[in-house]
Length: 432
Image 1 (cartoon, helix red, strand yellow):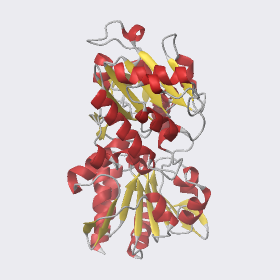
Image 2 (cartoon, one colour):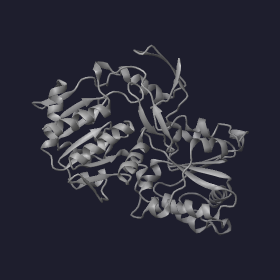
Image 3 (cartoon, rainbow, N blue to C red):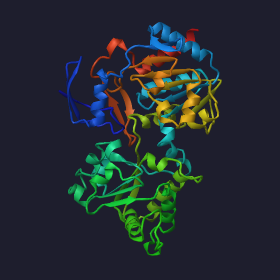
Image 4 (cartoon, helix red, strand yellow):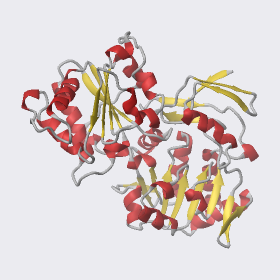
């Protein structure tokens, strides 16, 4: 038995114990449901173990040579390729994806662009105060889940942070306050204690709450008696007191807060609020954790910054990086692409119908290890090994801390890793 890191979600728990003979995984100890599902994917019914290409309107098994040849043909016939996903692969594979985009004058973006990337895009002007899981365990006395159902999306996050005892928090849960801000009463509400604060706000009213907190920051006596966003004066007062008097507070920023709600720039004003609180803090500071679901969502921005000096989406022309404000969403909206290379993601299921429809009308190359709505519509499907199970690699945890994943068992049918497959595609294009 040995301890390994888990690629079930972006928390990348490094205390999972497995028993394996190198061929099968016999036992997994300590993993949550997401972690167990990741290990079970080895033999799952929806696992892809053979490459496929579309013939006469139907997907059918093909040889690797045929599938790679078809992939290269589609890319060669493209003048405006779109690459998307890359949040469920290693940093090494992400770098190869960027190299592929550069060599074919493509546009590459990750799942983070519709999640945590919305926050990072505004940090140049406002700055951002981040923290780590270790700091939260050792120092935090206030935890806020804003638009984040952490109990289900990152199942062990509260166990590690809220219920833990740290170097400076020896009494653990007893002195920690947990606040939820969400329009939906999620599973996370079930962990509330007597000192906690459950704020079920009105839908699409986060911006109103942010603005009133900015106006009344450190001035609880002037909070409007009518309240705001469905919260009464007493709840607002308690929230503001916690924000301004915590010794070490952290806000888990979830997708619920990042979903577009108004024409105004919600994420920009949210960052300004955090900055304002930290300037006026009486005792400590407020930091952020961007709660991304996919296990290496944070890695894409790290790789892009390290190699191209820019986080987020990258656009190449004549093998040179050019400035762009585009994201996966408006590229599809504008029909500004002529083929797609989708790696480890299922946009057909998750994007709005009109965008999925546009995406499916152009040639689709899917690189993934499990069947999905997207793979069913693909022109070419190329299977890859499970990162963190069948192949190792570098990843970044949701708090931007690097974690090295390890190989446990061999993949079936000698399936290549995402890095190896993308390298083969690049080499094949260079030979043509």
